[in-house]
Amino acid sequence: MNTTFSKNIESLIQDIKQQNYLTNPLVSEIVESNHISENDVAQYVSYNHSPNESYGRQLIYDNGNFKILLMSWKSGDFTAIHNHGYTEWGCVYFFGEATHRLYSVTNDELKILQKDNFHKGQIASVCGDLTHIMGNSSSENFTTLHIYGSQTRKNDVSKDAIVYLPELDKEVTTMGSAFLNMNEQLILSEKPLIKVCREVLSDYFSLVKPFYERNGLVSILKNIEKKLESKNIN
Ligand SMILES: [Fe+2]
Image (cartoon, rainbow, N blue to C red; front, side, top):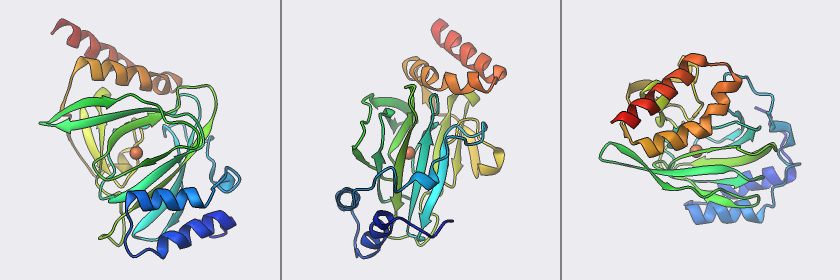
């Protein structure tokens, strides 16, 4: 971990550390007041991330009870559908236009709640059970700054994040990463996927297909097609 931070990142860390009790509105206010620019995070940009990873994910700082990361999104980069484990407060600051879906998980079924994108300069709140997908459907690269924290945990704040993988018919838990088709070493546990209707599936596949196409993952693409066809018949 690089410990030489820009003045603004250093000030962001100190401002968060100084609070006795963090809430989502407060952490968003702190991020806004520190005017973090793309220059402040330039050393953490990772558009050249491994092709196995579906977006760039670089840790900037981990204080135990909170951590700060920079995600890098080149065209076609996407997370899987995921939540945020033990996270109790946090936010995402957008340096570009991100495609986004918000989901609900009720009675063992995944449903879409919202399809609004996030825009450059926006700040979105995050908590553990926020289930979403985000990525880059445009042709321009951008980054996002993520803060995840907890009032109660002293480490691993995003542990036990749930990642839903309809193309592999399973859901898994991780330490916080939400890559598509991720390396098995990142998986803590796995079980069969909950119910997902055709509308959610077809929207999801349209978002993540570019990742599988660019990596030539033919068997997964075929599974996607097969699932959509079978949902058609039923
Ligand atoms: Fe997330």
